[in-house]
Image 1: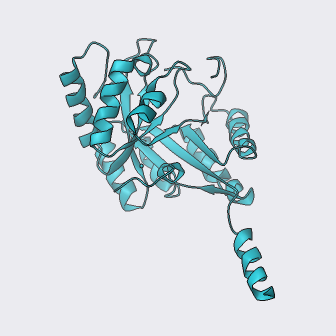
Image 2: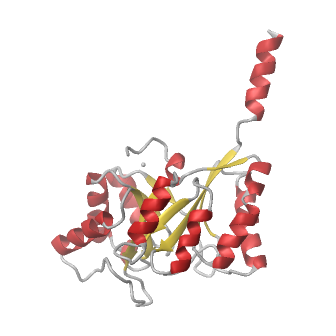
Length: 251
């Protein structure tokens, strides 16, 4: 009996209290984006479609054991250029879904998707139904980047049965050391009340250097760093704040 109790306590001490997924998105244009390949393989990488480096980085990252997402460009309220694979409210359903299929096919090994920008499009229920219908058919899970507090993407994903996660924190709206540290520590603090956290960050040199130097703190805080799909309530086959809030990135 004492032996069994000892084994139980030993096992329990190695179980992480909470889990964090870190997603690096906006990958595909800059040669410096390749630096994401130096991060641990349990950091999730989200690759922009139809970009010069997208296929290369996605393939190499997958071979290293990383989970790959397609970072779907969606229309923003600020009118910013969206880039190749853009999804807009001016497109017919047929054109929209065809564009979405092209985007998915351009990022090899993608098992999930999250929105790039989209503060306008994610508010539109019809277009979000088109997105989720396509993702459901492709067996791709969705992460709502929450670029507007009015997003409908998550609600429609749940309605249609698309496996869903939602971004908790943007790590690098402020790329200064103090800004990165504040958001990173906030994520750690949130694990006291939430058992899973989704962080979105970008392949800025400052961000990658910060992560390289600080990821060890998660294990020290009894937090597991996991691929994003590990936070889903079930496996995927190969799954309101004010806009001035620093954790919201309006795009």
